[in-house]
Image (cartoon, rainbow, N blue to C red):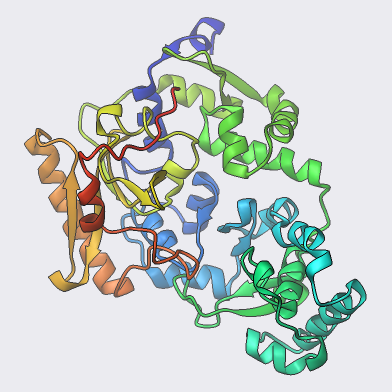
Amino acid sequence: MTNKESKKTFAVKHINAWRMHRQWLDRPFKGRILDLVQSIGWVYSPGCSTPYLSLWARMAKFRRVNLDKLVFKEQKLVQLETLRGCTMLLPQEQAPIALRIRSRTFTELSKQARPLMPITDEELERLKSSVVLSLESGQLNHDEIRDAVPSNLVRAFPPELRRIGLIGSLWLAINLLKEEGRVLKIQPEKRLDSTKYSFALLSNLLPDVDPFRLQVERANIELAGLYFRSEGPARVKDFAWWAGNNVTDAMRAAAEVRPFLKQVQVKDSKDEFLISETELENFSNFTDSATPSVNFIPYRDVYLKGQREVVNRFVQTRHSDKPFTRWKGKLINDPLATIVNDGEVIGIWEWNPDKQGKLDFILFDKKTPKKVQTMIRKRSVELGTFIKDNLGEIRIQGVDYGRHQMTHIHDLKAYWGQGAQVDVSPM
């Protein structure tokens, strides 16, 4: 690679097409599921269908049971609550990173709410110890833990605390233990889309994983290395947003891996885009295919969630009023299940259980080429068959999704063209 080649300017369209290629969305991955996850990065997995659908989109002969076996029997892949408090699917050897950088939401809330809590610090520590003791013999659900710990320590919290997520002393104790890396949330039904949970000690479930092996600073550095390898070209602020770090911590971590990163010049952007040194040559030599690359990806697929901005990057500005994102009082930059073509979001899709395994979808542009439409229809049939035969239904999100948040095409279409646009941030 010459210096001249490394300083070539690339269009955003080329970067998006490369990411679709790098994410194995333009051709099937023919290796092992574990190798695929190591290649594309951590997969969003909070008791929903996303991990199954994300891997199906990238593999020719993917089956749900094969992924479940890796997670629940072989434990080569693990689910952990980590960055931004999200549950992610990742290789077991990366678990120390995930456990060290996870959000400490309940830890901070409990400090702030201490004057209003009807339990002392000493009592809370006793309750935590009782929870750990109850789990030493095996996994238990919330009610089973409640029956095993001292009843006088299980107390409901007042409404002002419940409004900020502090429900009661037992719920707080369990969440504090999770944030400390001592307790894990697991799915006893052994399906990633199950919303029934139990709790287990990390030392029982993953005895080889040490949550304190890494210092926080070192974990952030290793996380930055993983991110720019699978998500590059990307900016430091993309990494900070994805990881949930503040920009200062992200810049510090990125600075440590900077000697192993190369800058990519992006047309019409003054931002610094970085890519792993090992990926630069493949990126620079990558040529956009003349054949359209169409695929269906689920809600919060890593392809879109790994980058901070969607509008102006993956969705053309003229389509910013289209129903491609969640509703939470307003349209927010959180894309639903989308149809991508050559790196660009061109429509959305959803499972329709009333149509015998068929999908509903709408395209943003009525002038979508017939060749692309044919590819979309073919892919939709393949996906519908997979869902029907392997999943039975789709769960778009876990139990915390919230009914007030519109998710369906027929809901969002009411806002199409009515001026309800997603906030557009320039590149």
